[in-house]
Image 1 (cartoon, rainbow, N blue to C red):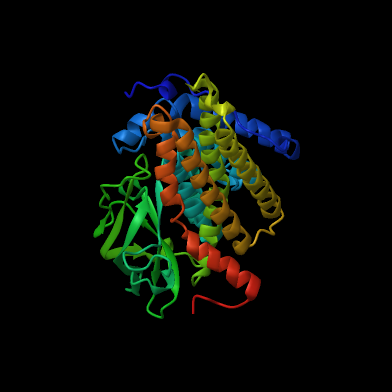
Image 2 (image 1 turned 90 degrees about the vertical axis):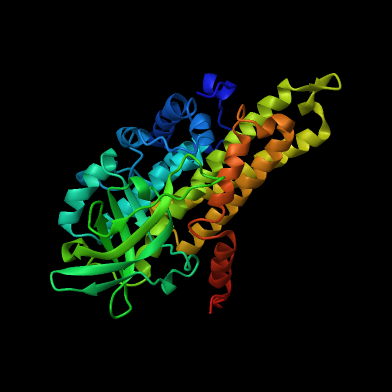
Length: 398
């Protein structure tokens, strides 16, 4: 186990410069305290070691289920939390404060696997899968991105062909979180008419493989792989009947991107908290570096941007609770808050000096992770164009 200060004690104190806690309900505060305590107890002592070894702490899946972090805003009748969207966002914030990979484990399971099953699956599917996924007893993954089709999912080549009582699935998916350890995969493929369909593929189906992707310098504590389908027989009962077209996977991505907009704030807060503490402890030229103007400039700009992102996430949460959060609004928050977090991490790294690149502090790990978060589930530039389309009505994609 890595021997560092973070392993010994997670001293994180959440910044709340604009008293945003006053906008939260008691339930939100209690949920946050519960998840924060769990992260300090179960994630912080081990995360640097798992990151260094590029290994996923798979044992945390069941614990994520026990603390209600898997599908927290889905109905209780299916074994889920029945919480509101702000609670869901807060959970993602606290998990990503621990590590983006831990948040990815939970958000993929809840938003990209459980959500489409709940929204588009049959009642039989919901009863079969959701309670086990909510407990972390089953692990799921989401198959949309392909080797040659990332930002343009409509160009996917993965396909299904009708074979009577089942479909034959062929194709491949790339950069799939959780895939090597997944029990089920929610996969999007084109049928013979060219319509995009969603289906559930189970581990062990003949012709279904999930090779691991090695060599990542980012999200090292999250396991990533491929999905490979070679004449896989998928029962028709495993196909979503309530949705056709790109709207299905995009609605799932909106749910996940919403969580990321909160999660990134957590990573930024962790970097800021560490930098603020370090600036008061590190002595140079006879005084703490926090007393120097340039250090104060960094810290003041960091807390300003974090506060703006907190307000953006909170307002998006109130809209989501009312069913009014549009995909474009979610894109704006995801894009803004992730870039903010990455810039905060970079500034925090400078305040820590050389120590900022070591695993004695969380800065470089967050920075590496956020480089991926900036790109996945819609790249930074694609989200910019989504906002551009929304405000102009002119489509830059075609």
